[in-house]
Length: 284
Image (cartoon, rainbow, N blue to C red):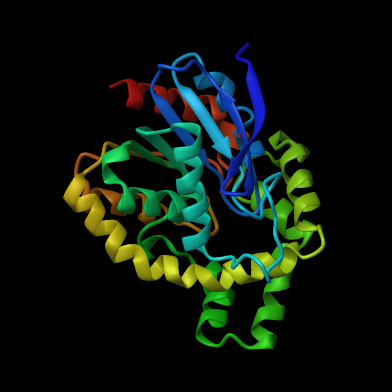
């Protein structure tokens, strides 16, 4: 079995928790999680890739075991999440790497690619969107908040922070919900229940509109640099539609797209299949 180390990095005074596995000198792979998760979501994937890659999976600022400073000292925007992770890669010596992006990890990782295209060797997107084609009607309550950031519209989004909604995100679109371990959604609910975490997540819901505004820039990066690209997609995702996966081929014609019969958190049910696809793709 591969050994996984659990570490903290000091990123200019900001503590970033991360998981690390694999040998130095092997190709580097950065794993970026999504909402409302943490690097824990990669617990089944990392052991299946660590014999071939040097893997690092950080918790985003405000998530998991990374620092969660108050909103009075840290502004929770995706620009700022990406800035911290950008410096994190420099602090730990990840100079050139492939990146696996999921959900919130996508606008974070794509910002790194925009800023440092020379550092990105390949991209694996697992239900990580960069096209309006991929946004389902499930985004309508959040869109309403973008259009009218009223107290009422912000409060309406609290329904997305409940344990019931988190469980639903993990089990929707899965053929057998009993195959989904409760560990992931239970841990996510624990982190979401911390004092102040709700307001941080509501801030990020509001700021997500700036990710959509950056879609044209992300797409221009894809056209200009054409990084080796693999989309591995839970086809029953209630938030990011299969059309969003296919859209990558408009700007990167050689992009590979693989669909799996599962939901948003595809690693919960298809970690072995996705690991095999990633390994084959990155080695080639």
